[in-house]
Image 1: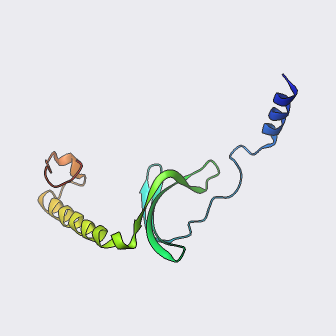
Image 2: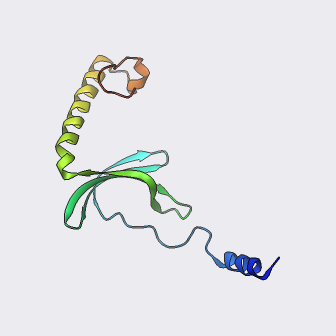
Image 3: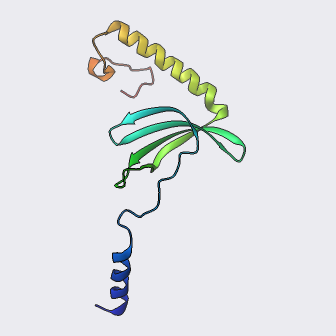
Length: 123
């Protein structure tokens, strides 16, 4: 082993195993939290450079037990996009209410075997 490899290994042995540090604090105002097997999906109101926006971000527990944002697992909604989001959520609520009225024993819409062709639904 050369001197450089030896020094690299020496340094590695002194570094924390989990990367160290403390988990970042979610700076937004949390509006909703959706539990997921891999952690939780957080829906927050945020402000960046005096501009408000909404954020959906997946957070998961690290080896240290703290929640960390999962890179590449989030997206934002601009305030000007909020009316379309609200209308989409309203349509989804209407569809969910209709579905549960037709199939009150069904909790999982996918298990009904129904076709939603033309509705834009991905299932």
